Amino acid sequence: MFALPVAAYMVQDQEAHAAQMERTFIAIKPDGVQRGLIAEIISRFEHKGFKLVAIKILVPSKEFAQKHYHDLKDRPFFNGLCAFLSSGPVVAMERESKYGRKLIGATDPQKSEPGTIRGDLAVVVGRNIIQGSDGPETAKDEINLWFKPQELVSYKSNAEKWIYE
Ligand code: ADP
Image 1 (cartoon, rainbow, N blue to C red):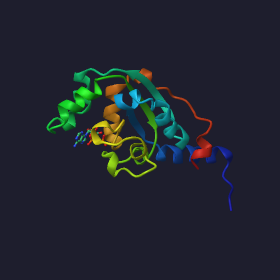
Image 2: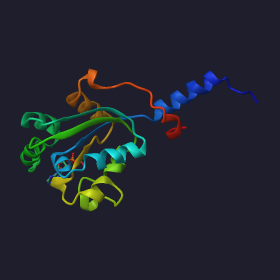
Image 3: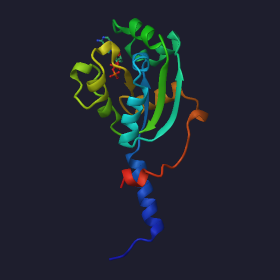
Image 4: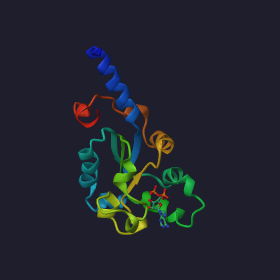
């Protein structure tokens, strides 16, 4: 049996790692911020091992909220939802993560499993404290909407080799 040189292992590791990685946009909505849940929500992702790439706090304008939720523009709750998102500070993040939605839970907190962020910390659908991309394509659009390229930080996490094989 041949032993691969160390450099080859490293390339394999990097490829395996890259294959597992997706970028996700996450936002702690005004209810999560006002309820003092910023640290609790961030810690769920941090403890899981999903690397933080960008973070900021801002109050989105109504127009910005409409852009973010443009897919839902025909839904009866659209106006209320946009007014709500722009009603106070939002903590926006980009993370390297796979299966981030599993941590967040279902849209309706009453249908979210215990152990998920919404299942543990939220009660009703209109106050479900967190937003997370529902797939890699939406994630790209949302990251482009919320962050400028220079706001994204590129670095190697020392914990990566303990999280991914
Ligand atoms: P998710 O946030 O889980 O991706 P959607 O993109 O379908 O869900 O909806 C965006 C947000 O709109 C939800 O997080 C929730 O705050 C709100 N919303 C969804 N459905 C309803 C509803 N029936 N009534 C009120 N608000 C809703």
